[in-house]
Length: 504
Image (cartoon, rainbow, N blue to C red; front, top):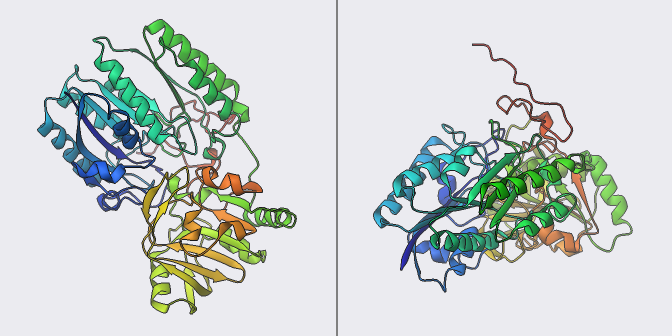
């Protein structure tokens, strides 16, 4: 029986975000299972859209013994604290050390982790695993397609395999592809050749959706390129909010020989570069977007959905800015709902007052985001919830969520989902958990950039993108970059980055 260690440590780091990821954030888990160790991992990730779940399911028929180490994830935010990184990495490595000898290692990672003391969180973690298990043990890693891949990650792992969908409906499927890659590596003494390329422009998150062009065609090409001579091809659109030298889209190809891997990587990189101008779209100001949604809703049979993209908690936002809610109120929107607003104090006040009460609150706006402030008003409490439910939509994939004490608040004709824990609005059940039926609304405002499309696009009359204040800039060029690779364009067809000399 081959012994394969499995584990996961996931974080997407927005170095411009207001709040760091502490050890406690990983312990709670946010929109993912809490930090789990040992055999309990199997039940924690079971029947969910998680890379490790797909890997586990794919190896059931193989003569492998899986050694569960540690799995944890925290909501995207600013840097992972040094304390959190070191405590978690130390425990993951200790579990592997106790399980030695090992025949293989599978890691479920994100690819865009920046710690307080390390730019390249995944590269350092894989380096430590490699130092422990030795060069002969294959290491296979699944990555989010928003990973900012570094040379160290490519060097230390035998294979890095990325998701192919955004919204990420194939996380578990990617884990299964990693299991197939592991089987290939275990059956051969020869490792595949590696070809790694980084693009020279950043791709805005809002235009990375793989159901829309140009990503739809590009990812179809990624899938079509896989063959016996090219066992794995990945295109990572990257996470354009991490201020370090390797923040960039990338291509990773594994081939039976170096020439075929290089040729495929060059071909795919050229195809992506040729589409640079297509990574763009219409963005509305808050009141402009609400008025357009109201106009469309007059004749629509289904809800008009607005992405509050710059306060996306899936990209480092705190999910508490009030720009879009204020726009709904100012424009007197009817049959409108917005979620999720992360405000534990407001949720607690609602639970203390009870359904039917009217409470005066300073809602949201507590993150210190420039141009944002709380909405001070009287709110009617329409429903309360403990925040625990199953999210059956394609993104969360049946995962069990715990949003903490939650409430539906109403101001005028606008309803607000208020939660005590952060997770992006990417499942219809998040509205229903506090008594809001999304299909009955004329306008839905989701604090999400793209993941919501998996569950909401089928019920939406139209999807608009709005830019209210928030830390995840819809245009990366406006961020105060300092440490990018010189010459990298911070937006498609934008100006090359040139570092400003720092005064000592």
